[in-house]
Image (tube, rainbow, N blue to C red; front, side):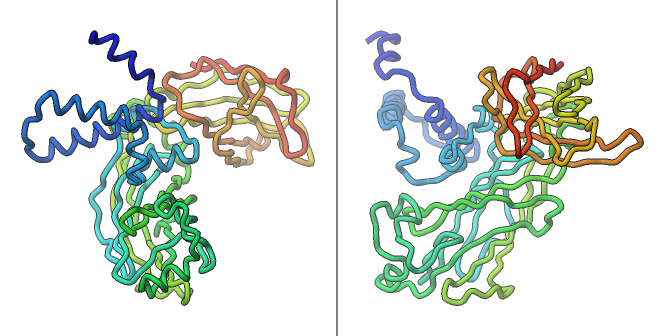
Length: 369
């Protein structure tokens, strides 16, 4: 069979599958660099590749729940370059009263950090979700218990598990890194995988202030506190808070910062946009909009990025801050959008408020360079 025939026989894989395969191959490469391995014959390599292609969703089926499985679960798209920057940080601590915690994977771009923390329960312990109750069904813990309609309390009783433990997590230093989202999935071995996501205060400002192309944008020290709570004894004694300490290194930006160079007035909204600055990483596109109000209003307008059809392109909401000066209040609005391979030539902004969404025709294009 010709190479072209072989390539066309399987069709084109979807982007998420390509990222998972790339992730797997990158992990294999890292493992080979860590220790000597035997040479593998070409025939075996081909067989492995065919198994991966034909399986299609082999990684998800294995229920490993790495970062990409969690992020794709919530339709969060990263660029392929993000695979190359996944960290497996060395950690201190992690051995708790009810479980042992290990940081399996991490991504950090100076604004946001995503972690996957694996928890293996001690003997006689059933780990559940942070908000689980005794009457919840086991299937709610994740794919490992798919189709299991048994109640959590009953399951634990029948399997000799005398402790049912919820786990929540937070960082000791909130000023350095704030945990905002915890997602969890049961593993086949009885453990739990937790996706912990959070942000660095002023992270977008820190990222923009650099040259955008440096080898390493900075480091982040995290002291993750894993709080284990017995569902039948919801207390928080100190010995149930297990500390895991580790450092992360920020991935480099892949473009930017780029900015607009002229102020623009939105007459109807009473806004003057002084400047728009944007920068991109393999994890997201970040923007900072500096603007002033031209009159007193009962509510303050915001600026939303829109596409050609007028649909909002905003990804995770926005943060708005104001600073008083002699010329009035200068507001900084921070936005996060999906990652982009190349820097945009412009961004279209339209004003909106909680009471009013303006027509896309009133969007103004801001050239960026």
